[in-house]
Image (cartoon, rainbow, N blue to C red):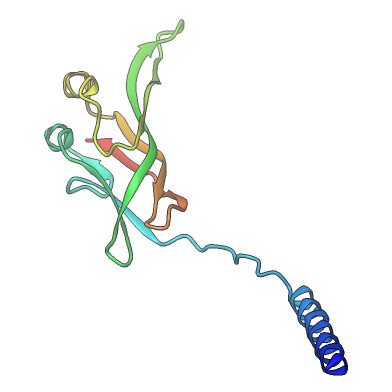
Length: 156
């Protein structure tokens, strides 16, 4: 009986050592690089480009959408809204010069232009101005955050 217990103890000890060595010999799984999905950015009906002043003003109540190639809508974590006003002035020599004045606003976990900006933009926007939705960070369903391409609108 004593020999059986001794043999059983030896077998258990050897199997325990072999199992622990096998576990330590396995390489830990390292996460692979996550490939960001290809996405398109829309603001209402627009994908960017030239727009008339009237079309731009009609977009102010529209939402900004980021759609993946799998037709999934991704949540916007952060984005910068940039309005560049094209202003002209004369220099000391009487030559007409162009200068852009930039106004910026950051949105977080939101997909619309802030209410404070809507009257300002609808009154101030004019031909030659630029509106940019930039540095768009989106979150997928797993919680990973990716950058989306900028959307640039030029007013005709």
